[in-house]
Every structure is written in C-alpha cells, then in structure tokens.
Length: 321
Image 1: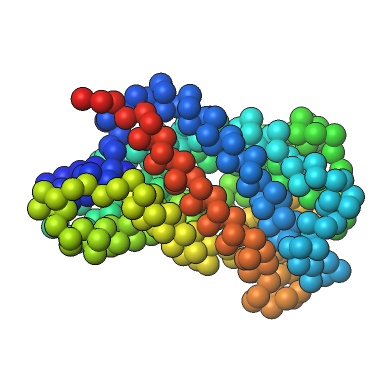
Image 2 (image 1 turned 30 degrees about the vertical axis):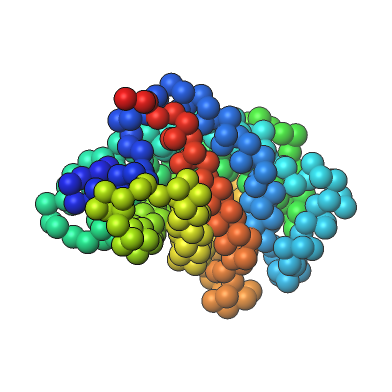
C-alpha cells in the first residue's frame, strides 16, 4: 500500500502503489464496494450515536437495549435512519479521502526516507501524515452529512426532535442557524477525525510493517517466493484490527463531545465546555467513553472491512505491465 523505496524492497510484493492503479476503475468499482460495506455496517453507527447522546434517564442503556428499542419501534428500517443522507455524501467524500491519502503518502514516504528510520517508524509517520491530510480534505463534505444523518439517527429519542428526511433536517438547520448550522462542531470534527485517521493509518501501516518484518525473515527478502494472497489478507486484517482498537480508545472522548454538539437543538446551543461539564456531572469521567463498545466494534469492523476491500480493490485495479 505504501510507496516502495530502496529500503522497503521486502514489502514490494505485498503492496500496490498509487501510480500502478487504473484510476477510473478504482473510483467506479470502489464506489460500489464501499456502498456495500456501508449497508452492512451502518447500524453500528446508529447504535453508537444514540448511546452517546442519551440523557440521565437512558444513560444506562446497553447497545442491545438500544437495538431492541429501535427494532421494536421502527422495525429493521430503524437501524438505517439517516442512511440515504450518508450514502449520498459518502461517495464524493470517499473519493476525496482516498485520493488525498494515496498522493500524500507518496510524498510523505519520500520525505522520511532520507532519515533512515526503521520500517515500522517510516510507515507510521508516512501513513499517519497521509491519514490526517486525507481527513482534513474530506471534512468539508463529511461534516454537513454527519450532522444531518446524526439528527436522523436520534430523532424522537431521549427528547430529540423528529424530521421528515434529510432534506427536512437541512432546511430546518439552515432556517434556524444558517450555513454555519451545517458546520456545527466542525472544529471538533477536525480535532476528532483527523487525529483518529492519523492514528488509524499510522497504527495500520506500522503494525503491518512489523508483522511483515517477522514473517519475511523466511527468505522472501532474498528473492524467495512471494507471500500467498491468504497470508497478505491475514496480515492486512490483523493490521486493521490493531488500528481500530488503538484509534477508538484514543479518540472516543472527543467523538462523544462532537456528537452531542451536533445533535442538540438550536434552542440549547451548548458550548463544548458545557457539554464537558454535563458529561462529568452525569457520569464522571466515564461519561466521555459512552458508546466505547460500539465505537470500538464500529472502528474495528469498518476499518478491517474497509482495508480488506481497499486492498482488494487496488489488486483488482492494478495496471499490468
């Protein structure tokens, strides 16, 4: 996945670089693959969001009780509240993200290569910088989609307003708050998702390099047979799980604050400081980790599924020479 340099030759057989891809095929096929992943994993995001915005009366709800309540009240469609809005914005946001990720990674690897750092450290720095830059570039599209979808996810729950679809949310937000309303929590989104993306990609890149450094001691680096596709997929999956666990533990507090800021009504308009005080008053410091379980599952499931689909997509779209 990373740029291959002279000091990274052992990994060349496990990676496909950006300049070796059919970009048109990559974007078209990728849109279909990532839409399918969104359909499969979206309910986890709904449950996580609901747990993060619960009031005192519902703060002890477990993920299972939230699921039961949604299915009891709305059936299976309740698990897909806000899905139409998310899928509409996901394609352009994903294109921006992946393009920025791969192009930045190329430049980052070239910048760190002269320092002669170890393989895992080089991968952590380059992937981390690329992940952060990709997140920054995609936030302008992602934040309005996030606000609309999250309001749909929690509508009617724990005192939150109800809406008639994503357009109704957008109209009401624009009417009451103007365009700034669609970017409420933008700073916190950047502070949440950019470090989260940086941590995720840094963890993924470094853990994958570390694992390969052990596995490739069998002689692959000296011209032996290339690793099997099964082994490559297993290492990528392991890297995705490690990355999801690391990122979710580090960034959940900011994500909880951001989510509350984005879904609370116009009449309340709490500041980040007020949200922090309320969380501490309700649950102490553990309040910042509301929804950690679903967030961990979400980031691990999304991350691992996404990275396996992403690496498969790159193999599928590789230009044969």
